[in-house]
Image (cartoon, rainbow, N blue to C red; front, top):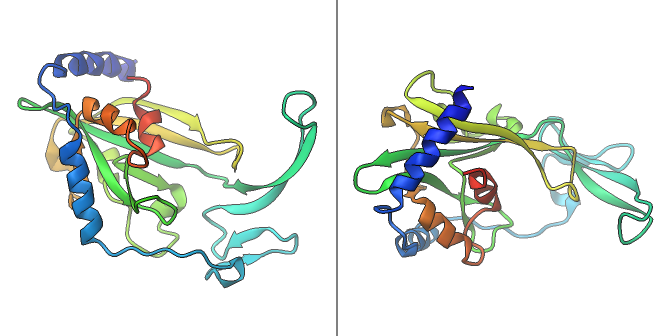
Amino acid sequence: MAERAHLDWFRGRLAASLTIEPKDPAPILAWREERCQAIRFKADLIGLDEVRGWSHDAKGNVRHQTGQFFAVEGVRVESGALREVASWDQPIYTQVEGGVLGLISRETPADGVQFLLYAKAEPGNIGVLQLSPSVQSTWSNIRRAHGGKLSPMLEVLTAKSGVRIIYRAEHNEEGGRFWRKSNENIIVFIDDEAVIQSDMTMFYWASLSQIKALAAIDNVLSPFVKTIIAPL
């Protein structure tokens, strides 16, 4: 199995990197703050009846006009003695397709192994920018169902040469909110940085030690980053 061999090799490179890689997350936090000051991003809660492009169907479910992205439907649960109550009803997100969560990595003589973090703006983020995987995109976004730009760094995950797949696995999305959704988690190692064609303005190379330090700070690191690096 080529990917298993790559994972074993990568774990060895991480061990060797420990002696030289940066440990202090302060430069990353300062860069994130600078990015927060440089961008314009504003989000306010509004009523569902005001949301453009979304509507209720005959059963009251909320769907996008393209039929893509997610929907909000209802689920009825019979749990027996497994949960706090024997049964309940709740809204739940349904999405036929999941997404891709990818971390791009490299190794340099000066700083060892590094991972490319994306300062991603989401409407529900505390602090606007969260340090997220290099690629964090649903298949609806990859197909540009929103009519906007292509998600950055996808060219690295689809490159025919210059990259190695360290590992990939399907991980179930949080089942209390999403109905049977999974994401493909991927780590790729780039042998040739020329495969990166995307604008790097919102990206930062971080060591595993720095990522671990960021994980101990409130509301900075995406939980998706933590799940991707867990097998390492």
